[in-house]
Each structure stands twice: as C-alpha cells, then as structure tokens.
Image (cartoon, rainbow over all chains, first blue to last red; front, side, top):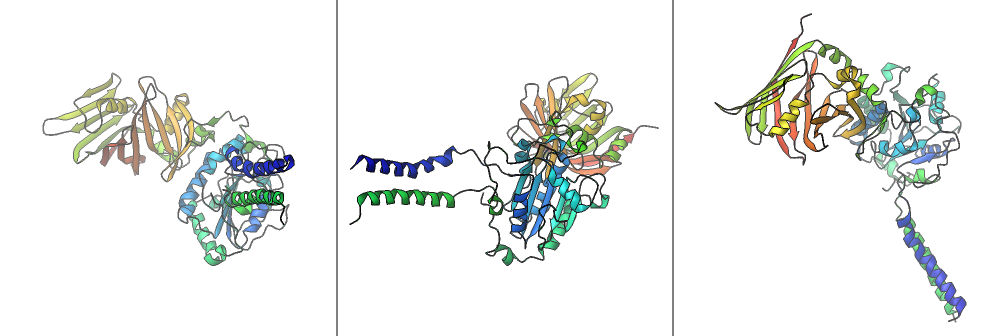
Length: 210
Length: 285
C-alpha cells in the first residue's frame, strides 16, 4: 500500500474517531440562551410558536420577589400541566438589582419543563421594549404576560402588547399584582382556544429534549 | 473494477458522515429547537450580546451592581438573592401581625407530643424577654421539665422523642419575637443566606447567630413571613435538629404554628407536637 494511501486512510480514520471524543470534552451547556440586544432569537422563538399560548416573564434572577413569582407559577401552572405542548414559556432574565449572567442558572431551576426557555439579556432592553409596548412610564420588569395564540411579533423594534399581564412593581396598577391563581385561570382560558392536536401536529415546534 | 483506495476513502467518509448523523440525532439540546436555531452556546463562550451591561436599566433598578448585598451560602439548592434582609423586613402581609405581637407579653401553648405510638400532654409557657418553660407529663408521677430564663437553661427529667441536648438547644435558641421584629432590633445577628425551594414554598434563609453553643438557620416563607423550618446547629456547625413548623393559624392577632415536627440529622422523625389551645396575654396599656 502506498504511503499516500496510508495517509489518506489515517486521515479518514482520524476524521471518523476525533468527533467521538469531542462531546466528552465539551463544557456543559448552559440551561439558558444568551440574547443579543436585538432580541432576535426571542422574536424567532415567539413567532415559531404562534398557535400556542405563550407566556413571557421579565425577571431579575437575584430579585427575591421575582423568584417567588416564578416559584408560585411553577406550583399553580406548570406542576399541574406537566409538559402541556399547547403552552410555551419564555423567561427573560435582565440585569436588575445587580444581577449577572452567573445568577441565571440557579434562578432558572424554579421553572423547569419541556416547553420553557430561559434567556439572559444583559443590556436590559427587554424591559424598555415592554415599557414601550405597554405605554407606561416605568421600566418594566418583575412582569408576567400571556399572549393569545394568534399574536405575532411582527415589528422587530416593537414588542407585541400582552393579551393579559400582571406585575409585582410599585407604580403599576395594584389590581394587576401577580396572583398566581388568577394567572393560572387566565392561562386555562387561553388554553381552551388551542386544541391538543394542533399543538402536537407537524407544524408545532419540537420540544427540547433534556 | 473499483479502485481499493476509493473504497477505503469512501468507507472512512461514510463512517464520518454516519457518526455525524448519529451525533446530531442524539444531541441533547437544553432548549427547545425553536430556540436553538441561532444562539446556543456552551459555558465559557463569550456572550454574543452587543450592548453594555445593564445599559438600558434605570439606575433605581440596578442598585448593587457590585453584588455587595448578594446573599448566598454554599448549599447547592440555594439561590442567591439581593437585599434579602430588606425584603424580609418589608413583608407587607406580616406587618399587622408584627405590630400586634409587640404588645404581647406571654403566649401559652397546650397540646400533645407524639413519639412513635405514644403521646404525652405538653405545655409550653413563653414570656418576654425570651423566657420559656416546657412541661411534658409522662405518667402519673413522672414528667420532663425544661426552662430558660435569665439564669440560663435548666433541664429536669428525661424528655420523650428528643434527647437532652436537643431539648437544651431548643430552649437556648428560643426567640419570643419573629425574625421581622428581631431584624429591626438587632440586624447584625442575622446573616442572609439566599433563598431555597422547599416543598411548595420558596423560603428566605437566615442564619441567626448568638453567643453560646448553638445557632439556627431559619427558613422563612417568602409570602407569609412564617418560619416554616429551622435547623439547629451546634457551635461547630454540626446539625442537631431539623424542625418543620406548619399549620399556621391566626390567634388573637399573631401567627402560631399548630404542628411542629422534629427530625434528626439523618431525617428520622423523632417527635411531633400538635397544639390544641393557645392563650395570648397582652401587656396592659
């Protein structure tokens, strides 16, 4: 066998076997997605799930009251509808109260299910865009929104206004303070608009497989 | 006739492609596929953000950028939180109860201690400042007594369910006031440790330091401000007792746990107290 042939075989073998070792050497994946300031990934994800009920939460990952909100919704919404494909949740962690990216992973444990994605957005523009969408004069965070199945995020510079929302902020209407039971009832109302078949059909976004 | 070199190369290439396909099919994404189409990086990769940190967040919502008020301990289940003590003190649900407690001079508890299949009548009498006495009747002529006063902790007899050291530690660390009131009076005795999810409850964790042989780690319900659990530790940090308090009820303007379960360091249930009656005595105004 010629030298060049041996080299080619060796190269082929290397190409074959090097990837086998590669995954083991990889660092563990983050349990969240890092967004850039355009929020383009969030918009893609939002629109990929038109036809489902979508929840969007803007939280500070070191804010105890935000964490309590997540914990409450885990109890009232997610633990009672384990992996319901008709609802998709986006939890955007923003840098309020001095939070950094390192704080996202521990906080993200509070809502965990197949159809929830956590994001870290380090400029905090998410709160600004929601402030704009809501037409309020206050930076919006600790904010809990539901979007009806037909809502689409069309304008990349303008977040869609929520179909229903609650908050835990001073300066916004007190009757809209987060009440996990009320929020769960609203989720049910919106879910009634979506059939299980449509959510699990071929057009549906595949769930994460962790 | 086929060139054997081509066969070998084809074979290697096929193996490579086959592995790549297998690898892709077996990938374990941590986010849904809709979210993976663009940005999915691994720990350690630089963040793709294209703006300055917190540049869009108003100053009043940033606060603490150096994380100097971040509370966390070393437990895996702990979630770091900012400004924990302020949040505990400012619990709006708690405020009416705390104001009410300030005018209480004595609280007397009457109930039963259950140990395995046995049960014993129990009385606990508490008074300001941090006085407590416990009486457990064990039969016609036998009883256990424990008390704490300005003269220290005194124990007489043998307790049921808990050991003498455990009873001593409970008496030594008794606080008449709640953490909310204690935080107002003596904030330096409290070390915020972050938050932790218990069954159905997200709790604030606070370490209460005190002179002497024991200290406590409190778990405070983040909605109601009730102590739902505490760990008793000795000065060396060894775990002595795990106490769960539940069935909180309002009694004459204060919140009282009507059920208390005591577990050893290994999780074994040692005893359970069930209260039947609570008497609140207020100071004369």
